[in-house]
Length: 137
Image (cartoon, rainbow, N blue to C red; front, side, top):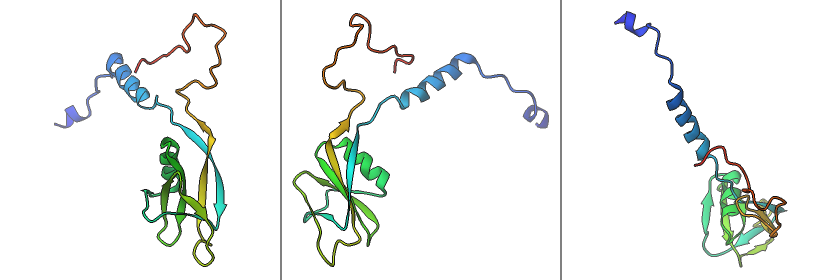
């Protein structure tokens, strides 16, 4: 009926709304490992078999950041694909082959995991919890 369609709706109850918001907030709680890279033009990683393929640079870098065995990634310009490579893979420049390649090599010492404390530094307030959490996910 038309009248029912345009009738005022019951307002959202605060408790289910709060539960929904907490659920959405908890999905993004995990922090990701981030690393810095050195960019190379005209060089490519060489290996007989590609390890991992990515669709774009952002996903390639994210995957490489998260995988400790990843040394870097490059763009294969002919197929417009990104490939990740393991430690031990060489980065080479080959005339006539790699001129259009772009490669990024992970700088391992720059990788940071926000979930892990670094350098064993002690907080001033040892008796208190590290951080007060609003959402206990």
